[in-house]
Length: 212
Image (tube, rainbow, N blue to C red; front, side, top):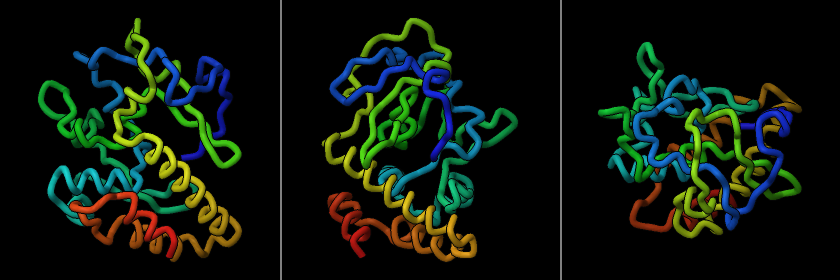
């Protein structure tokens, strides 16, 4: 999701790489689930998120649709996001004692928080969102450890390629708004609806679809 923001207002004014240490560790978030409430449609899911959710829950994209995920317009395209439920608008995967029930296969945005990504010149860097998490006295942690994703270099390449692929699709829609539905349906079908083989490497399957 693209946002027009003043980096000096939302961050500490620095950019980071995966090798850098940053004060983001919330100590397990015990007693706090603020970031799991009231997020609206902002937890946009990428193809790897769906791969992880379907594998972790032993289900399909369509089976998630009734109450776990929903479709919304994101920067001119229709994309899936995690659903919020109830009067407190809690994430549908927030379980007992306000703990994440899918923590081992949680979406990328959840893994990243309270960090964000700043995209520029075909790549991206990380930044620390200084006003998003209410936890005080956070500890320093290496970003590579915090993101908690195997083969981080490959994952970062995927994130980058996916971002710029979507950006190109979005530019087409902005140039011709009538193309929003057909382009969105193409993206949804190719990268989300058609099941991924959980026994095979995700990246190989993703790039095969991307190259079509």
